[in-house]
Length: 346
Image (cartoon, rainbow, N blue to C red; front, side, top):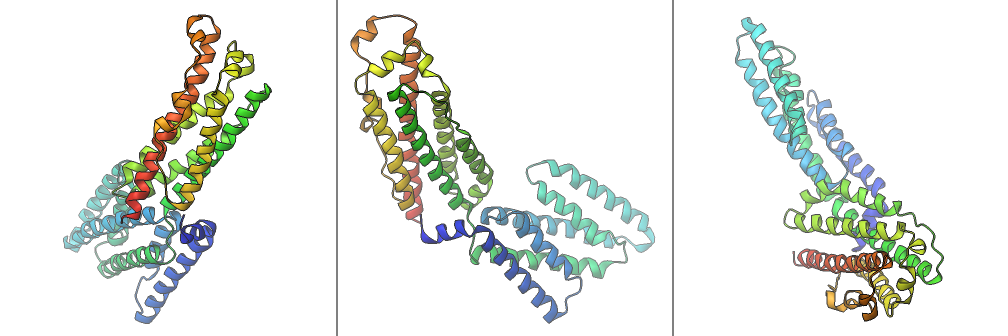
């Protein structure tokens, strides 16, 4: 991970406050120097864009929707001033109809843009057909303030959701490594204790919340980030099933403990998880082929194939869970390698 990425993650809140401080300072300075009327709308726009969404991808999306919504709302609102003042009742009927229609679309894909359309129409035309001067200045202030917010988000210690996303990926892999080591020790000692995997679930939840922002920051590689997340979820599912099952109560416990090479294969896989976490830190991922993982080439002893009893259910189930974790791990290394190769070639 790059030095700036570590710095931006460590001081995330402080840098957010600094960006907003700079943006508001610039806007107040411009308002005072040029004595702009209705300048409070510029301040409101900046706080709305930068205050609720902290990452670059979210700010870009929200700013784009705000500008688009403002343009559309301003056009509609200003067009109402073409109606003669003697027909003020028509002005208000069209105003209400437009706002209600925009509110209807707030449940769609571009909900924020639709909401901004409704707000802008009210701001621009809500004062009645005599309020054209205020309408023009409110519209102008929203435009230039949105540009200031975007520039500050882009160039003043930008917070990239992708950096946080990949940091969570590293945390996920480290945690999997620790849990897998712990599980292997329990199996070897025949002393099973349930392992709480809620920390893994919390990491995935945080990554899920970042996905909309990462897609805006990585248009070309957004599919790769989605596949990385899906692969992590597969590993989480298999890991959860393995860590929550009381293998010491299963009929196949002895077969699991006695299988030649199984413990060595599991420890090799745990070490590969640890190595991958370090490689993410260095942003240099070596993809692991499936044939390089001992777990995927490990076969049960021939005599076990000749037996057919209830113990085989848990025995083969345990082997399948370990093999599936190994297979998904291999997929994850290839996805991460492809992503960082694309990132380094920019």
